[in-house]
Length: 339
Ligand SMILES: [Zn+2]
Ligand SMILES: [Zn+2]
Image 1 (cartoon, protein in one colour):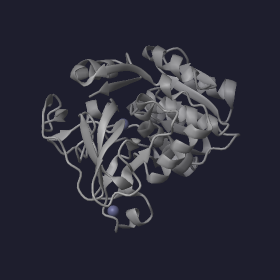
Image 2 (image 1 turned 90 degrees about the horizontal axis):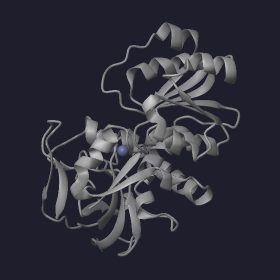
Image 3 (image 1 turned 90 degrees about the vertical axis):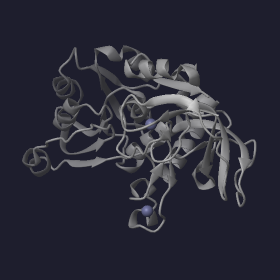
Image 4 (image 1 turned 60 degrees about the horizontal axis):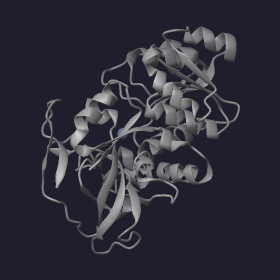
């Protein structure tokens, strides 16, 4: 089958080539991939990358074969899969359901073969059946939506009176904004001049304020128009270093900061100012847990999140380079490849 592989740790070592088709073992499910989204981490890399490996971790497809002892999933099911496909099951994190933090964790598209291929094999425990109303393309967006529900509904609790700033209007930032809106929060999404298209899409899910930091002073806009004390929660979804200081700066005392973007370098934070004097609570949100997937599916079944608006481009797998360029140059929100 054709698959897009990261051959080694060099950034430009990605190639489309023929590899052996995977077969399901005991407890495993073989899926014909119908849609696979491109993520920033496919382009910019991630520390858990273990090449040579097939990239891609946001996908949906159809079950074509099941291994022995598979009970819940059937051939023909329309499905998607969690990214964590190996965890030890005995460490303190696994025992509490935090498989995303297991030291032995393997995720598809980084530690194990991913979804930029005609077929993928994953363990049954990771598989979720798609809600009926979802297309395969929307199904490929469930993974970033589960990242958003983990950040917004599990790593911090948002209430109806909360004022929330989301930094970075990429697919994750838009989904985080929309999930926060389902809790009744006021949401301020912050981006730059080149984020015009992203702002357009964000509006489809009723975000309260869209602020362009090339045009307005964000801190002033917030303290003058929204709340003189600052906001309650910040989700940093851009991974841009200056966004971290901006996020800490706009929080009111005792506010909550959640890091969701990957910065790729160390950050220096003034503990005296932010942790001691202001009592800020700073945390992060890494990938998803099974409970965040369940919350994402639940949201889709009970609300009208316009998930289809996130997918702006659909391309055959052979045009992966074009898809990667569109993503890198912010010409797309989410590019979905069809293997
Ligand atoms: Zn991703
Ligand atoms: Zn573990």
